[in-house]
Length: 159
Image 1 (cartoon, one colour):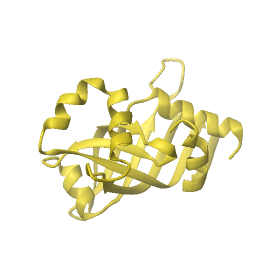
Image 2 (cartoon, rainbow, N blue to C red):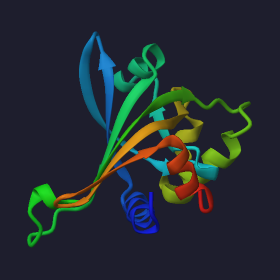
Image 3 (cartoon, rainbow, N blue to C red):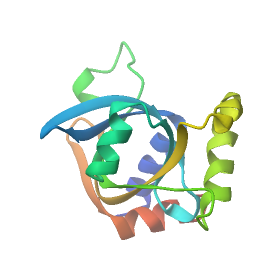
Image 4 (cartoon, one colour):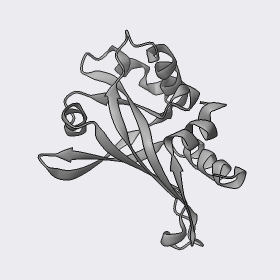
C-alpha cells in the first residue's frame, strides 16, 4: 500500500455514505443497502440496523459479510472505471456495554444526525464490520489489494 492508494481508499470511504451489504441467507447470497460510518481507530465500519431486517438476522447467524462502496456515476466516466472497494469482513454486534460503543455511536451520528431517534427504537442496534481484506479499484486498470492491517494504518489516524 502506497500513499496514493491509501489516499484513494480513504477519500472514497469518506465521500460515500452508502454500501451494498452482502450476507449469507439460507445458504444463498443476499445483498441489501446500509448507511455506514467509519469506525474509530481504523477498526472498520459501523452500521445501525434493525433486528427485523433480513441482513441483521443473517449477520447474527453468519458474521462473514461483504461491503461494496462505489463512487457516484458521472456521465463522462465509463461504469467500469468507477472507483470502488469491496470489503470482506466479519460483522459483530456492538452493544451499549461494549468498550467501542460510545465512539461508534458518535461516529455514526456525526455522519447521520437525523438517525438519533432510531437509537431509541428497541429493535435497532449497532454492528461493527471488521475488515479481513479489501480490493480497491481506483479506476480503469487500477486495482489494489489491502489487508486488515493496511486498512487500519490507512484509516487509523482519522477513524
